[in-house]
Image 1 (cartoon, rainbow, N blue to C red):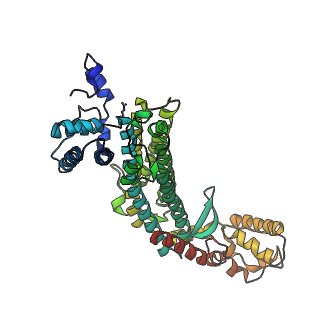
Image 2: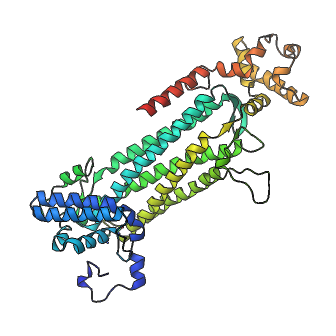
Image 3: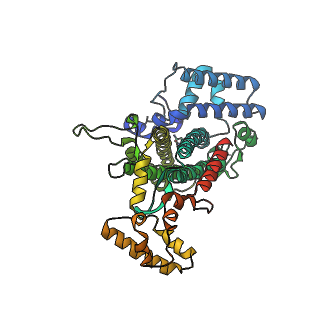
Length: 458
Ligand code: ARG
């Protein structure tokens, strides 16, 4: 294919160099955004009297037919083309002749690519937003069903205090809610239209950049044409949002993997989201959760790759910037795939409440509550803490738990102990007594559920 810029060259590009230079294999996914941008550009050119109404009609009809043909699979991408922008333009010229050659007045490919990625990412942000909301909804529903499921809460992966499974799950709902909002914030900043930067310095034509920005759904135009074409902050920002989503998914995955092990057995994953082993017949492996955990590294890598590509790049456009797309596309694809597999995996995951409860019984996780019991009867916290610590040591030695020690034993340590202590340290009481905002207490968890539901209904 003859290059549109071939004029000043006496030799064709080396075949391997041509392939190396070409980006159509991956930027073809932006065909719709490229065509939409061009349609609006033609409208602006005609409105400003830069092309005629007739030429505008021809261009728009030509571009619309290209779009239709691509979507109906009547037109294949020419992978010999340099990129999607060149492909669309040359196809247009093939179809409508000279009017097609006027489309590229008052714009450059540097503007086009900066525009197309923004439009493409804006669409994907919506999709990712929907997937995040779906996952939050699944978590909310699971939490709703498990408000009475008592389990150990951990610090240092050591049993710490009793909590409900609902409370634990809702912590993830909060994280994904923040992720949703973060993507929205990044999207707001990204919706700044670069078209009309005209490679870098602007143009001598009387263009109307605001018109194009508005027609394309942007919030405004980039205020500096050099920045307009050099900026890829929005990719970095979104990739960092996606990396954070993956980090949350990975933490959740790790817990699901632990919970479904024989050592915990707090949950059973549905058969449809687990795999068997080729050699060990007893195995039921949490592959999906492991893959999500694994793919997190890849999304971090995409972010690092682009940060590194941009580091030290002089203004304005440099071909290095073509490397932005594979990184951001991979990160978009990966986060979407992970979110779509994660939601149904969590929805079909079966909590095993008895196992959670018995683990909660074994870890002295009511020791804080027992100390608080003495404090409420007037003992200084440090003294109470010491007594309870000694009692825990005694229980470990005797292979028993605080609930099963006779009252006489307690009395050896303090007269403040009475029969009401057993009720005070029951796991149910420990949970119910937690009344502070955000706590694991039943009322507080109800408020958290409402908070998430309100968010989902917005
Ligand atoms: N394919 C290029 C990219 O993805 C489009 C912009 C090319 N501009 C240029 N002046 N060579 O970055």
